Image 1 (cartoon, rainbow, N blue to C red):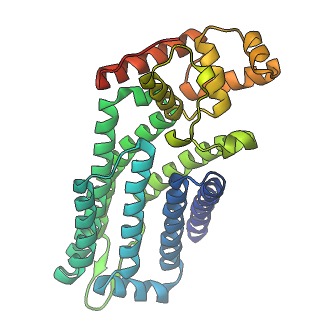
Image 2 (image 1 turned 180 degrees about the vertical axis):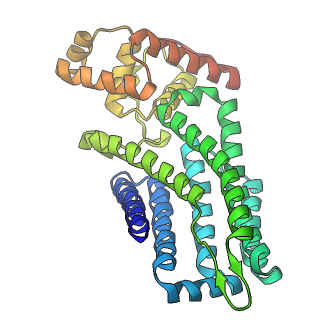
Image 3 (image 1 turned 30 degrees about the vertical axis):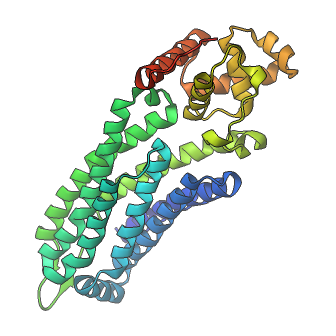
Length: 340
């Protein structure tokens, strides 16, 4: 059993370390805050798991940690505060949302709860009430994220956003499961007597959720690593996407902004933006190759990447997605849309 727990901990640490390394490398290359926040999140997952691992294998450390936890759970409080903030900032960057005052209030309630609860309640009730606010907080974040995506269905056409929505749904479900597991373990298996204190610091549902996060992260960053250096290093924020005036015919100011929004939504590189423009004009791969003075093989590779990002397999499907995107923006903002 000890060997199984040891191997399990090693696997967790490897998964978290891989995501931390990948995300920090992406941050160094792209200077995008999203990657930095992800690297910090998983770094603190590593810290948390190392301490939990130590409580499972070192009896003296476990006893000292459990006693200090009942008095003032400083380490876990830092974990909650930092990871909670990271989750807010990650969602803000993924969905391009500004943090609302109410979201800040919810976060401050979480911080206040983990700071105050240990001084008001005792033993098993204290531990349960201490863990509860964090799960309510993650459920809240998932809820508002899903609500936003349900109102902006055009964003779900983006494969990355679709995957993020899946993560939000899983987070909402696992937040409930974590509370259920905590309720069972804390009130039935943990020991809070005057003679002995023994707390099970690991929550299996929480581990499963963090493993899911890690696997999604590894998949995402593995895809980033397959991009060419030029593509990988290109920033993808709206303000940094440059669209040449010659690329778009009969454009209006609103359409240029719309085209930039579409490019950002699907994480298109500047070269892919050029090729998308020509694809929407129904030009063949050969025509695109001649117009951009690049090889036919390079064109096919970029076209394949565009299809993959937009999650389509045919050109007519791409055009349909683009028009649906335009119609959605037109409906929301009442702007004139000029198709190619």
